[in-house]
Length: 629
Image (tube, rainbow, N blue to C red):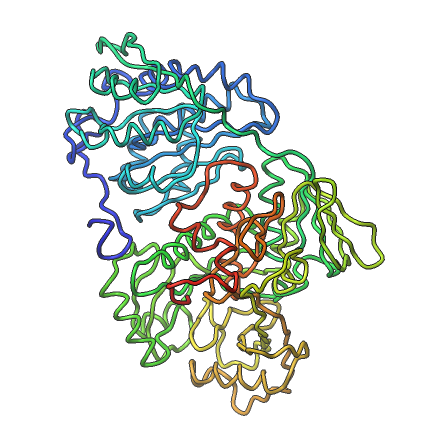
């Protein structure tokens, strides 16, 4: 299926296996040399880009960026990763950017890479993280965050127009120009130049004169050298003009807020080697909206595949990879049912299914009987089943994320103002010594606006939400999976099940209220009739908690540089807020993207999606034609 219609599903590669080697049926060409594909990669791409020597020369926290025009089986990526491990200092990082129009299915990828036993440990990690066949940009973090892969499934021209990066070396791969001329056209050569800097090198197996001349025309000094094995010639080159890639920032980083947003971005920067201080007014992590005992991981995907849906889908898939790997003790992969709890929701889900095709590993429809079997409770309606979703313990996730030697915490720090001082940022707090840093990230939820040292109106609001904790014995049965609908209901933990939450606009009451409990119980009983024990009352051993979600006018996150009322950025200051009720879903990918921005690494989001989260859109004078999520 074409990835531009019928939802995000993209057509995968059709392979023929000849003498145990994969051959593309779409292009009628081999993926690698029949003589020795791994040695060909090392000779063509690693040797002629001088990678072993350049890896050795990297300094502390340096990031080396390799870009590639055809991911194929991933062999080039694994060979570069293996060499990086062998030659680069332990504190350096590798970032690999690649594009693939016809991605291999998971089984074909594993079969192809099984040809190289020496790459087996790296191949297993790649296979474990390999994206599902969905068009667009996927960010994979591997090797304990030392290696990042930005993998774009789709057209190469579209990819390089959409992605933001500057490569230190290029692997011009893909199939031969005669088999795949679209990948070698002049426009793509110009894109290679646009994503390069002075000193960027390239290598390619082809020696076609047209390709050599096109690369020379955009500024690469090209030469023909001996090819691999029986192939007589190949090309290599270096960009001789242009500016150098800008250096990464140094100095102290301060994160204001220890909820899921602040803890996530602090951890992301810490594992990249930066020293981070986290300040929060609470006594411990997750004292605000991230402090609920349970939280569900899910996204409500819209019927039409627009940028809003692509952003939410990318965030959900990234979160489903992140939590099992990084916070396994707080991750409960139960699966999740999005119930068709009303006529309107059932109609919406039917429209969604008619308009979209998703892999069953992402979601699939279930009827009432299947829904009941999966959740372990009687479900009067079916819905959409998300097999890789589940629930988390948010406060414990925050605590786990902040447990890193590069992170220092300052709790009970009631921040009062943030001001620039001597090209740095100074955060003042009641009765506390000021905190000074080169870079500051405001991740304080609905309190963020109070600390922004700018004038103007920003479309940010706080929405009260109260959850209700129900003792397990007050239900006729306990679910073994998350159920969402008019309310959500999590499986039991410590003898309680959490449901909620209320959505109270223009209500700043921080106290737990009986009427909010009643609202949650009635919503749950309407969605799952008969589940609550007869005559249960809001006062029957019911517990609760109130927090305030931070949302925006369009219900999309705010991630990016701090801007003033005129839309100008304030250097060294960043915003990470507006995650609403989906903080667990948004936080991993948004933290990845923000850390990319701060460190100058390739961005995890394409341009079309960075606009969805840019802070400037929330200025009161800004206008958007996008509808809320």
